[in-house]
Image 1 (tube, helix red, strand yellow):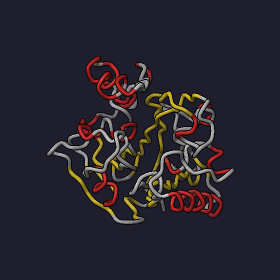
Image 2 (cartoon, helix red, strand yellow):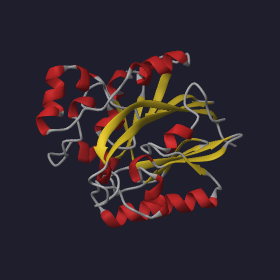
Image 3 (tube, rainbow, N blue to C red):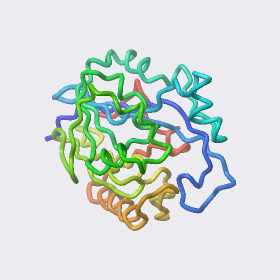
Image 4 (spheres, rainbow, N blue to C red):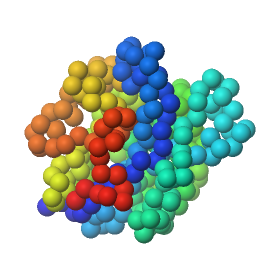
Length: 258
């Protein structure tokens, strides 16, 4: 029996990126408006948030925008008022203090940006991701300021695990060292597979194209194949995090999957 009652898909911004960021060595001439998402679960154990989006201060503060983006010739993500995470939560009657559990799939800037504002939450992360995020080898897409606060309540996990009945996390190494994806069982909608950045677009899965940014290519391909197998086995539906076409057909908050 699942303890997950509803799942809300929160569209919390867009990134303007070459397609090849998502498809290895393919599509560098094409520029994609790639959605940024979070997933809010209403469960018998309370509210659970999967990832926290991008902190818009890096785009709205001129000094930060220049430091993190413009100086490198990169366009900051776009977070319009209708995308703002805390406004969407308020519309659902949820405050930051109501969320006691946050699963971080990986520490890239578009997944962990608002985490530091959830002071009451336990933060779940894979060990390899945590260690990579605090190592000197972390890339520029890891904004240490987003996840280095001393009051963050980390809970470190290794491999596949279950947070509550109906929410299982799968370690899907490849895009980053400790990337994890989610499998959500819902009472009416059935199983939803959330790959996050194990594969951004439908073509990553249809054609088995690994992400453009990876730390381990064989593991990235294995993760794509594993998520395809889980989807088939459970007769589930895949909800893609970064696909600009698919996002237009999902039920976006305040609508939900139940």
